[in-house]
Amino acid sequence: MSYEFDREQNLVLIHATHWMKVTGVLVLIGCILGLLGALISGDTTAMLTNGLNGVVAAFLIRASTAMDRVVNTEGDDMTHFMAALRSLRGYFFIQAASFLFLAGTIIHAILVRQGLV
Image (cartoon, rainbow, N blue to C red; front, side, top):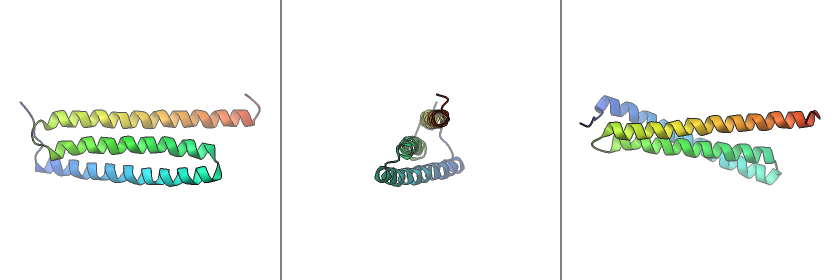
């Protein structure tokens, strides 16, 4: 037995999907511009930060596309919804992992600058 979201539920998903995609695209554009600036200035930290944030933005766009399938297909909404949630879980994982990596990089740089490493 398959489940179909009703009209009101689909509207909620449509709005969530829209803003996920808009946010992902805007962050990706910002990362591309930041990466160009970092390449021009030779700032390797900014290159790394913008590169990682660009990957995070791409994962958000990917998750929004998966969520879009829930609304734009007929039949088996729950299967599509679960796939979208798995994609969103990947987005949150890569965001947390990149944050931890950048935090570690910053802490290491501070320790090196202080002569502790």
